[in-house]
Amino acid sequence: MPLSDLPDLRALYALRTVAEAGSLNAAGEQLGITQQAVSLRIRSLETSIGARLLIRSPRGCSLTPAGQLVIGWAGQLLGDAERFAESVAALRSGRDREVRVAASLTIAEHLLPQAVAHWRAAQGDAAPAVTLVAANSSVVADEVRLGQADLGFVEAPAVPTDLASRMIARDEIVVVVPPTHPWARRGTVTPAELADTPLVLREAGSGTRQAFDDALAAAGFTAAEPAQVLSTTLGIRTTIAAGSAPGVLSALAVHDDLVAGRLVRVAVDGLHLVRPLTAVWVGAEPPRTARGLLDAVIAATRP
Image (cartoon, rainbow, N blue to C red; front, side):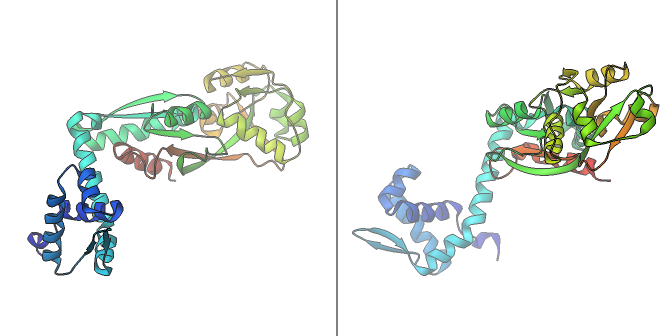
């Protein structure tokens, strides 16, 4: 069909509005036009399609079977048109020039930098600025809920049910010690030993801490009071390397320390220490300006 034969979008909007409002007058009020203008748009649409679309009566209006078909077919078209209009408005206002991201520490420090750099390089001069807030998973969820972030990344095993989400990768939680620690020579401990040992841990509310506590609980154990609680992965790595106590961190966070021999990984028999890394946002789909970044992050996590 030639583009010139396509129905007028304004007429399709008018038909949908009449169907929802129940009358030409009510539809006109919603659209900000007169009843006569609504009627003219509907008649023009009926003429272009070649079918009667509305049943008009003193009690109001209802769709004919043909009208119901047209509204069904037009649903995606009207949705795409609305998203296009929103995108144009965002472009005019300059909102496309920034993407606000909140991410838990492991993701903020070890996944996002490379993904953001590659994404912005691919965008060239049109690349939006990326503003990143690093916090624990519970704070990230709040930032997204409150509209302070367009997109969030969390490490907690349980994703907030009031946010839309997509798992982007899996991450392993590991127990690490300095090379001089007795566990370094053993290489393996039991869940009971781990639970009885004061550890260097992240604060409550962090995804790493939640994943560790959940794994112990699933095995029937509760962690001892921590030796230290720190809010940064760097602080925990430094404290463990100094010989304070064993600690628990993301495998991503300690990769370089393990390769360099500053820390030693200790296996835990029978304990499942794997957690999802998840993107979260408000609404059915991520904000349009953030979708490309989300795709870049997912691509960066692929083997």
